[in-house]
Amino acid sequence: QVQLQESGPGLVKPSQTLSLTCTVSGGSISSSSHYWSWIRQPAGKGLEWIGRVYADGSTDYNPSLKSRVTVSVDTSKNQFSLKVSSVTAADTAVYYCAGAARSGSYSFFDHWGQGTLVTVSS
Amino acid sequence: DIQMTQSPSSLSASVGDRVTIICRASQSIDSYLNWYQQKPGKAPKLLIYAASSLQSGVPSRFSGSGSGTDFTLTISSLQPEDFATYYCQQSYTTPYSFGQGTKLEIK
Image 1 (cartoon, each protein chain N blue to C red):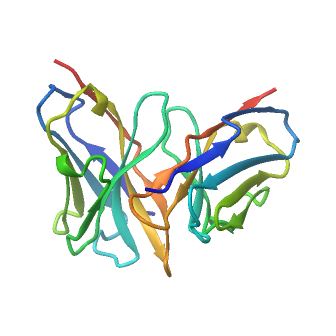
Image 2 (image 1 turned 135 degrees about the horizontal axis):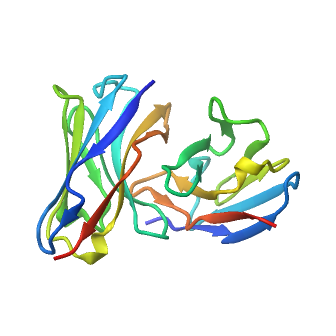
């Protein structure tokens, strides 16, 4: 059973860079059946897709965050990572890493990490 | 970007009730629509993908339908464990987007 686990600082100062890592266990991050995404959820609010990375390193980002976001993959460690630069209080949220299965042209998030709360505050 | 709108935003129902949640896309997304259930403090859980396909292990009381811009999630007979928030999500094109959620509460 594939499991995902986020790790990283829970507190980041304004204007600094938020960095999180997701470790995938029970399966290979290099599998062609999945791609890997970051999704966030401010307290009491809905879900926002941040971006995705494929095992070959190719990426797509949400334009609302694109200029500040980098998602990368390290297949040797079975991990993928998120960096968000120049953070503000608006970036305070629970951050989820998720694996998306690909079935033909369809994709859906079938594996999720437990989520990690990141607070932006001085 | 594609906007996803769910209705209602909240819903009160009783155990055993049949419940329907609506999700509308701002443009046609064919059948590229997924449904998730989220309980407090937990990650979302996939229920339905490709508008009507039941994810493995999900009870058959959950069903999805629709295509184009209008979709529904139906729970045929509510169980106590079904009280949660439900989200639709389009996977037609990036940036992927979610509905604002429907909170299902006990009446």
